[in-house]
Length: 121
Image (cartoon, rainbow, N blue to C red; front, top):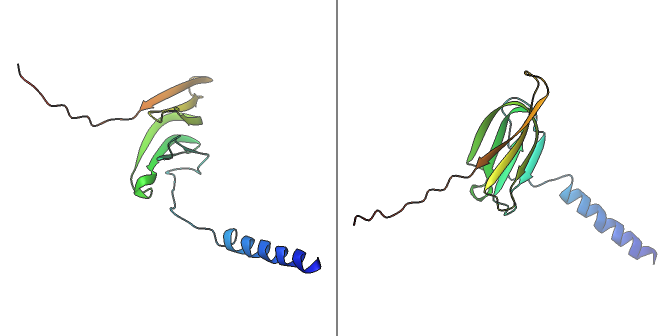
């Protein structure tokens, strides 16, 4: 019995050494002005949204290894971010202390590149 416990302990220690001390890094994503406060994935896992404490929200595409992204410049402190369930819209909660304690929610929709065939009758 003693050896089994020791064996389990050794396996656990190997697991800790492998996954905690040597993490796998896929991408390093930075903010523009401040530390990243909020991180959210869309429901389909395609988009990663990160928000700074104020002014900037960044959206990255996980299918391109986070190489392409978009930056949204907002005015005010960012209280939170959330994707819609179908990942078609991004909501950003904003607090603007310049004009008092006013809060707002901004909705940003995805842009689709639909090309329609024009038909002349």
